[in-house]
Image (cartoon, rainbow, N blue to C red; front, side, top):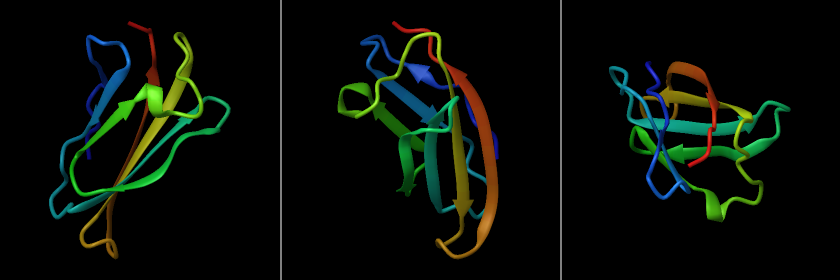
Amino acid sequence: MTLRRPLVLSDGKTILFRWETPPGGENYWFRLIDDSLNDIVPKTSLKTALYVLHMEKLATRIVPGKTYIWTVEAFDDMTKFIARSEAVFAYQGK
């Protein structure tokens, strides 16, 4: 499974996390942590290959210049594991 580079929208407050759907992938777990392994977005169940992060809804702020790790796990019907990918993301700000 290939993770695409996160896309920061022009408002500077919304980030799109996207990935290539693996064969058989129907359900996904998305997670975002900081470089100290603190949850920014705890493991979240999704039906599409997209997570939209609205920074104003986060309890913990995304800090410019800080490194984050995002992980996606793919399953067929939430029972059979298919793939897992992880990538580093450095938020540069607006």
